[in-house]
Amino acid sequence: MELGAVLDERTGKVLVVQDRNRTINAWKFPGGLSDPGEDIGDTAVREVFEETGIKSEFKSILSIRQQHRHPGAFEKSDMYVICRLEPSSFHISFCQQECLRCEWMDLDQLAKTKHATPITSHVAKLLLYGYREGFEKIDITMREFPAVYAGLFYKLYHRELPESYRNMT
Image 1 (tube, one colour):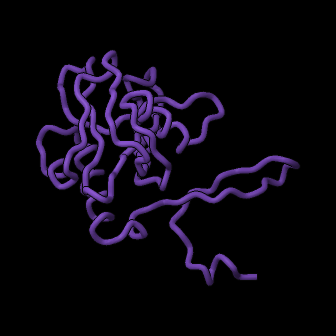
Image 2 (cartoon, helix red, strand yellow; image 1 turned 180 degrees about the horizontal axis):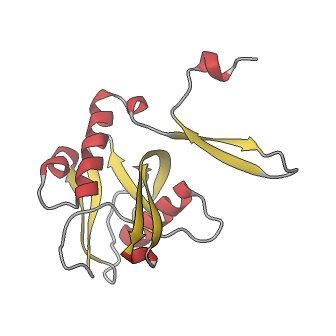
């Protein structure tokens, strides 16, 4: 499952939703399941658009949660990837079948509210730190490389290397 933490760096606001089908109406980042063969960032961008109507661009991975015996994953292990996205549209038109509410919330307010899921609260604090101190301190970026198999490529996610190390020969 991928989530999109969509941050408008001009205003310091982040896109949040409340799920319609939950017993607790806590704020969280929009997201959902990958389609077969779909990349992490593409899933986050697609799910954010489907749930909120907001177009965005993948910037980085912020964190990964792993949970075993997850009830929502048929008691199997589950990976939950939270991506940092940059909005390219701002007018919300949310999916009323999935979402009860959707809004742009001040990032520092989301980091402090008691009305967010625990993972949303923690990631909001991580995102606030990156927003204030520089995203290079928190981002896990992606580079694509040719695989050893002809015509195939893979994506490697990691903290950014300084240019002097990237260009070593």
